[in-house]
Image (tube, rainbow, N blue to C red; front, side, top):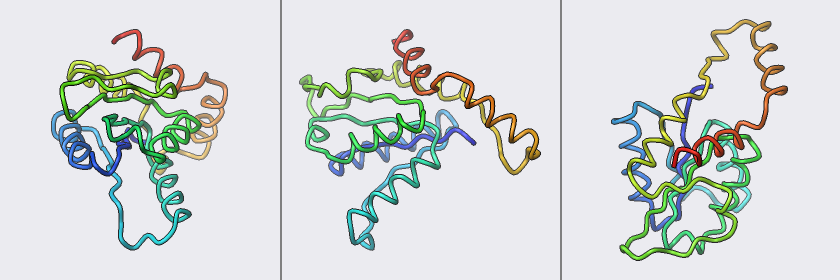
Length: 167
């Protein structure tokens, strides 16, 4: 799997998310995905399926947390799915005003990126993620990759701990 960052955000922060995705692609040569609402989606089940599928296609998650995010029901859901999938997670604190914002307890476990240097450290950790293309490896190599990943420690916890030490 190639490194791909799912950018989780509240609808009001879509412009921030899109700017961040462009920065990640152009300045750090990493793939980033920003989910925007699609008028063709008719139900909560459709939204849930779409989010889970996009997270399945990602290796990491970056949450944009602003004063708007506190009211989101989707951001905590996406965080839970991402952690369960053992993805590397970072939380980019990005208020609209210079005032600090109150963070919910569920974010205590995750590294908080407050400055551009923190974001760069996050992206450097993402680049360390082992990238492989399943179509280019043999069945035997694929089996070994799966076996090794099952034996290894939780990538999400390892990523979070390493990044917290650097911040």
